[in-house]
Length: 96
Image 1 (cartoon, one colour):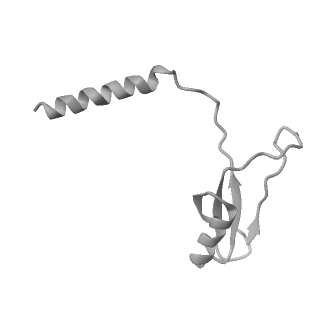
Image 2: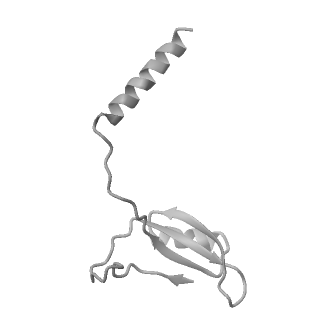
Image 3: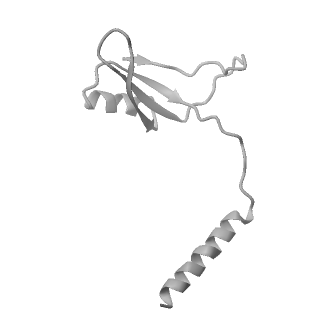
């Protein structure tokens, strides 16, 4: 088992990136370390480790997960519009 820790950001900044979720990468048998599969998401490295051990995995790596997405926020009315649409569909279904 190899554990990966959070390291410096790719931009060279020495600050560590916060990791919110963890995953387990399982490798094929043999010395090539070819990835067999990946299982995500766990709340902690410890819970990912427990999953791998309980699954009988022998050659795996626990690693933090980072999702690179733009920080975009939905318009404030977005939820209101969705809520109104759901309310209309419920009224229609009940009136039949």
